Image (cartoon, rainbow, N blue to C red; front, side, top):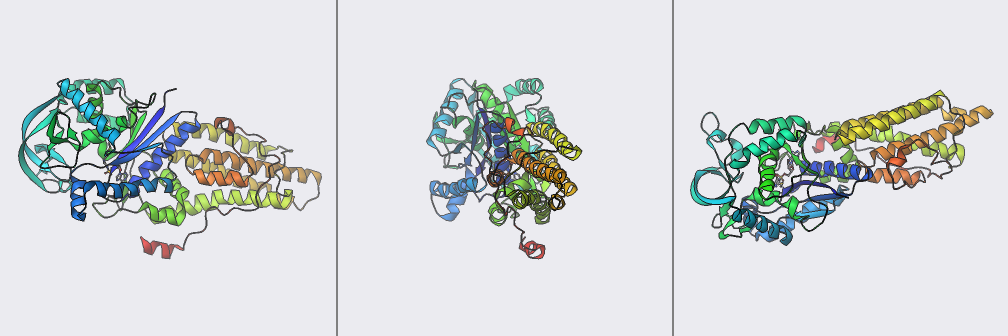
Length: 514
Ligand code: MSP
């Protein structure tokens, strides 16, 4: 069985991880977990991008060798993963021997095929972006945009990859594979971009200018340019694993779609006779007051602060619930607290509390069998079937925010059902019919909770494990078979209580922290 192979971008290690990096890991993890539930054999890769000018400069600033610098920062990125409940199968560093070996092999192969040539290059160079600039990159007034930092003119001999000759091929490929990039409007942008002629890609840097890189196998005086090195991580990580390549999806941010992932990468693979990935998912940015969160602008949030305060699952829930994949989203602590309180603590938390509390009070903690199915129960069951079917389709189409919204609507409906049945009143009656309805209502709320939990497992995995545990339930291995309305919980012994989402600090105090 071919693996469902999914990757994140590999993060630059010239600063600490921030919320944008964390989001990409969480989003990819949610897809990976969902696909595992759907029965796919998933291989999930993430990692770090360690070579290049910026890392060399950051290490120099600290007065330590680049390798030591990378070891330290990479450890920080890696340590974040278990804290976010990320289920990656592998973690690649571009300084790994396995990676360097493959990069050199691919470069050598392309060189021998005549895809790489040496030429003199004169141009304006941005150290910050590690790229040569073109006239069209200038501002209308002739200056260089802020994002390029300091720009200097240099002349040097370099190696070039023959990108240009594959332009038509790429356009044709994108025409034939119209779902290559998600969301669809991004693919249109790539096609637009390809209306302008491509230039060949400079893939080397002279060693005297950049020491910290992979030496070209055919010329020791040069190292590989960062993108050529970085992109190949997706392939080098699994080159020795049968049945994994090609990748199913690369999950990346919109800033690195065009040209690196949508132009360089498919052309590099095609030129090297390596099969192409199935697709690319380009997510949007987390903003703060409208500006991209990033370490260079200093408006980045440390994801660990939120995880420490609210737990990994609440953090994951918020990111996935709030962001429509592909769009941008503004991060505010207020909005985080609104979702946390209303959806997790009140809605889901209430259903858990009521189920445990009432089963303990009225049935000695044992989930009864349903007996008196009436309209109220039938409505919950009908709504369940609809929710389940919609949510699976939404998840398959990466509409995770809408899937969570629908699931929460089902939780709301279940809470409304409980209000309607009012088991606390039925519990006071000695009528046989009321007692049957009481048992039915307890069975119904427990089953609805079990099912809602199954639909959120990929987003809030440790919470759902805890809820299943207090319901005295161990889910079966076949996730889809778990989604039918059933009597699976009948006879289960539930716990008395579970505090899932404790009340956070009062907003005034919390807001002062931002
Ligand atoms: N090293 C390159 C990627 C090489 S992939 C072969 C790089 N690194 S990065 O650290 O700058 O960014 C890593 C990922 O984080 C990118 O996909 C980027 O889009 C994402 N994010 C960085 N800031 C972000 C936000 N504010 N919001 C969401 N994601 C953003 O680019």
